[in-house]
Every structure is written in structure tokens, then in C-alpha cells.
Length: 75
Image (tube, rainbow, N blue to C red; front, side, top):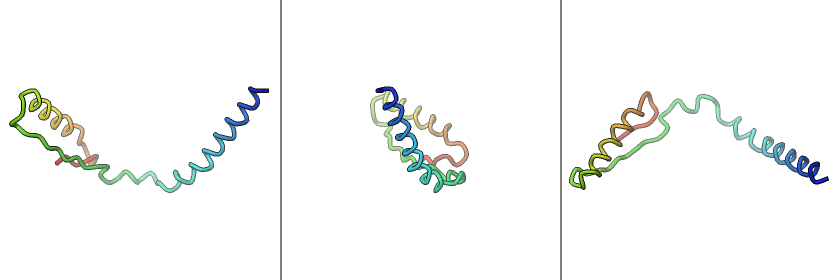
């Protein structure tokens, strides 16, 4: 009895989530990601502790390497 009730509610949940989420997917065509996804504004100073400066420089280089194509803008 408990197993069939659980299966019923699970089925109702999955069906209702599909019914409500399907129209949201229909609004987003596959070409929505052609533009830039996001912008990054980076602030750092060279007058901080040495480890912090080194980490900031490594982070900037890391994000520059990630910035291939039109993924995001790094300022």
C-alpha cells in the first residue's frame, strides 16, 4: 500500500513538474547564448601583502585564459 502511494505521488510530482517547466524551456531558443554571458570587474592593488598580490595576479591570468570567444568581458 505504501509503495503504490509513493509511486503515485512521485508520478504526479514528475508529471506536474514537466507540465509547468516545459513552457519555460520553450521560451529559450538554442541561440540565446550567442551574446556575452556576463562581465567581470576586478579590483586589486599592488600595495598589499605579497601573497595577496600574487594571488590576485594569478586570478587575473586564470580568468584571461577562460575568456575565449565571447564568454565574458574582463575589466
